[in-house]
Image (tube, rainbow, N blue to C red; front, side, top):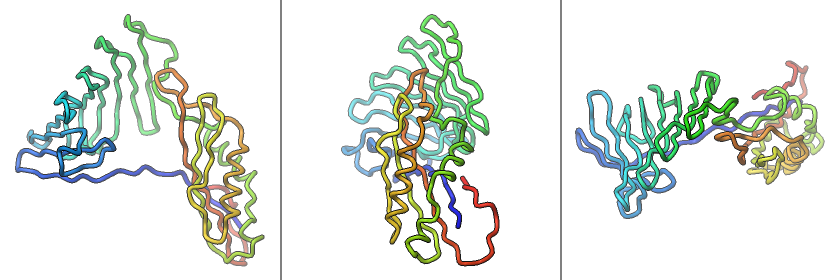
Length: 261
């Protein structure tokens, strides 16, 4: 019998819009979902065609103050391409993002209220490749971390090894369950000091509540993580982990039974 460990993915929402040929107006709620009604929106997004791109300008609906400005490959808030600037509720520039054709972030620049650069983060195929921070006088801050996710000590392979060596893989077999897959998704919080808290099974596989309890136990009893960092300060980080217990039919064993992320 073997089990697999899968990382949770991200989810995105769809848009509702009314459009003319060269101009589109979309209203968005505070959670980023679209609405047909201006009165229930927090942002008003106006797109204007510019050749093959769309120029997007968003405003705080109630005040009319600018929220963002930039280029998009489609008249859709979820398809930025090129530079997009974001502003606070008073219209002061907060940050600028550079996006590629697939709407992936290439770089991210934050600003002080004075307009001077606060930090810069550049991404490559494997994550952050360059991080720089400045003080308000424009001096570089050595070792500055703009953003870093919480990490298990030793990295992904160490986390995988910990789960494989600690989980009781035989629970479905002990319970006399039918061969199959029993998946548990566990959410947990990594505090500013790296401690794990608020561990909860988001689902309980049919006939295998013990699988959920075991997944929660192992994560709860795990060692501290390296905390997440944002703008050189430790921050709270929330993680989701999928663990699947696989009970196979009686047959010659194949493979090594290692966890698969």
